[in-house]
Image (cartoon, rainbow, N blue to C red; front, side, top):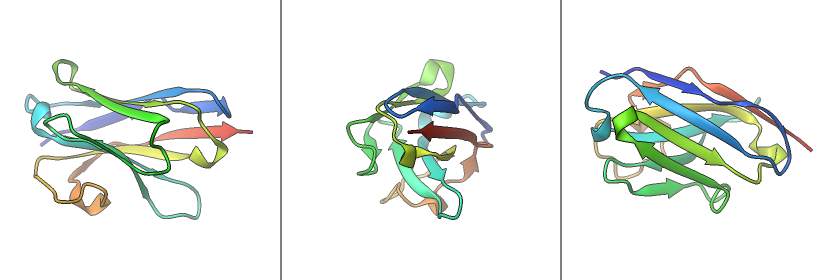
Length: 124
């Protein structure tokens, strides 16, 4: 079992950057795929990005070229670097992890562990 703590949210202006971190407990963190999802008020949870145990990265079309996901297994941490933020990026962001291979990491139901969430607010 793994516990996730996500952090790094805040309020910024459009065009600014933020760096979200997801830190996990457990010694087998390197074996987990870790993803980020977001949910804006009144909207469904949406996929943002995932990094697999092998380091393969997957992004939602809406964040490609602006966001970058990376992992540091020695620190049990996955980072979501968010650049060129837009007001439509405003949402609660949560990291999630799964130990199992998934054919599609974009579905939230494929993840077994979740962080508590961190708010990102981007104003124009």
